[in-house]
Image (cartoon, rainbow, N blue to C red; front, side, top):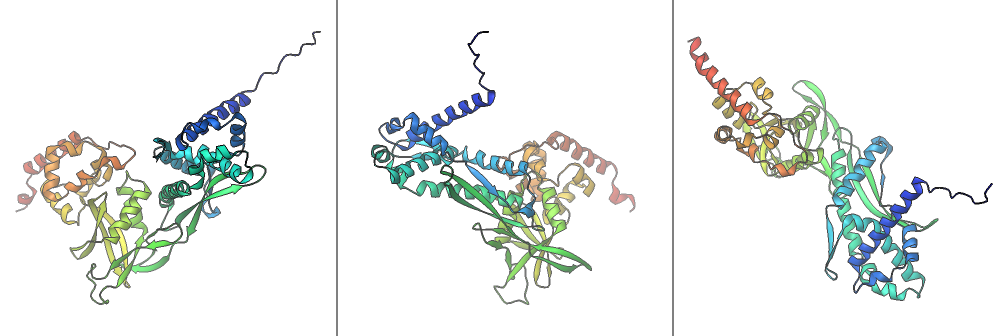
Length: 415
């Protein structure tokens, strides 16, 4: 038997780990090129790269309270959403002319930052290296900018997970350092839960729970929505009185159902902005607050005043009955509620993603009724596309409906 032993094959995992390390080394070099002058990145040796890799930043850790019941998949989706934003935006270094993606700065960049900071305080032997990257390690501006940007993204995620009837979320972003067994820095995102303010009110003879409207404003506090009493036409309260705003389940469901192509963040932010800059009209005895979405009026919030509290009872698209524009729209076309529902003219996605806005006939009808702003909601605000109905299908339906009305003159039928 031969004494020559066969070499054991390198496992796939080891090959994969080696490949990952090589890519990470390349990323560190790219970061070093972006933040140092005069080819100073060449001072980094293989041993240094090995050390930087051993203390590499672990990027994100999301800390969520148990009451949220977030599973690993949902946490991973949140991380992926943050990464997507960081890969889409960069930092420009004026001294070198290089741009560095925020994602690379949050990973290899923080690893290099940590290594250089340790070297600066640890030994004079690396004086040349530290001097080459002095501007990089002596400024906290980059870390502050990164922290603020990640907070901005996570704040959107906090809005996305906010449910007025369950909780209001606010994130905080901080840099953490682990010292053992090897020092490394990571970014921690902590989600704080604010319990909803819930009360029960008698509305039209029925006792219902209503939930206070608010979102976080600075990562820790909740910004509650109010409407000035004068805007609502309330005369029994002192001028300037701020009336708190609550919302009932029915309105929450209608907002989600009718603004169907927008995520929860977009709905909540536009809801709060519409309340902050409230414009109220009285129509058929109802108080209607204009709902502005992406700078376009798309509908109304129906408000009831109960015990000096403003309650959002429902959300109506401009095309709905009992709105000024909707009633004109129905008189022009003659459609009934079931027709509006069948043609999905009560959902925002129809106006954003279908070809309806390209139809001269439909655009003219919407202009005459005051509903044209629905056609002007910018498509770029949304990530997904849904073609509920083609414009041609709606045109055909409207034409047939008009012919049907002309053929059977119901107004004269019983005269």
